[in-house]
Length: 467
Image (tube, rainbow, N blue to C red; front, side, top):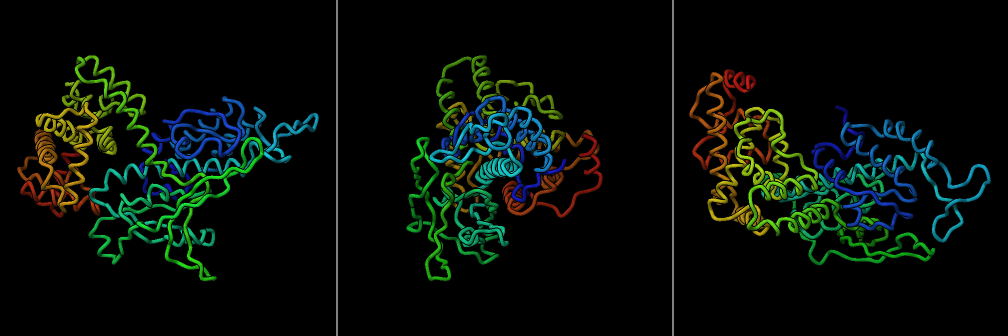
């Protein structure tokens, strides 16, 4: 499948971008500033689209671009005749009478409906925001291992000096800077964030900065109100410590309307919805829980684990426990679903891990139906990171890893490969691990008394392929 021709789409998990985009409802608006910042997380709009069917066509075109890797050129080629046929093209002028149908607020200039330039902007901004929101979610899931985030600008002639002033600089994932300056930071912004481990940052000699006392809020023009009067909005930027040719310090401000983090706002909106629903789960029957969790899962847009192809059917028999596992993954780290989806021994072992983790947690007296319990689990992960070695301080996670590897070992035996070395089994399942993921696995295997081998026997690779 071809990837969308957007430079910032590299190395992102498209399923998270799709989930972000598809979770939005449709909303008609008259102006770009009518649906402001956080509100754009839950609603999709295109300014000056006055008919729901036209908005739905544009939404469907972007959805197809995310799902199928449609390029900008193909997106425009497909959508242009549809919009032209429905009259949303060119200037807002009646062709037969010359009457201006709609003007920009406070102006006599007719509104520009569809055009090649406008479709290009719609494609780039919506896909970029979706990819960045998905990337933020993935990076937050892995922040225990890669807690340092580096700002990366493209650094060519099109890059704004304020954006380039942050290039290569590093802050912790929980620094306040990311609440307002996580890309995109404006129209046509191509910046991105690169996560890294403590070891990687030290190896590169990078300084970990702190935005304390460096953030600055300014009120700036933000388009026009419906009556034509000037609208203003606050944007929060950071003093960069860099200076322009006139000796003035550069303050990196996002554009008006971009002073927020779409990925963070999306996560918070989902958490609020799930928490409201989950609060009503105490004391209900398994059947009622099944129905509630199914509705929550469907509303948030996640495919139920029980429908995954190629996952060991023995793991799918306990439906109620499976639903609890699904809910746990959904709240804590939905990225694991990508590993489960691949099926086979690797995907089944990943599902086995999560199911065992839920069993271990409930054995300790907590229920994953409780948002408070899941928040406490997340805090345990954070505390473990603060202590410097996550593997040593999360016993239920280590028990789940052991169960996962033993499960995979037992599944490999009938296929012609028997071993008691769980390090070799881990190498077979997670052979593509690199960087911080590999560092994490090596630490965890050492805790279990095994080592990550340099290679795996050919007969083991053959057994994996048989499954």
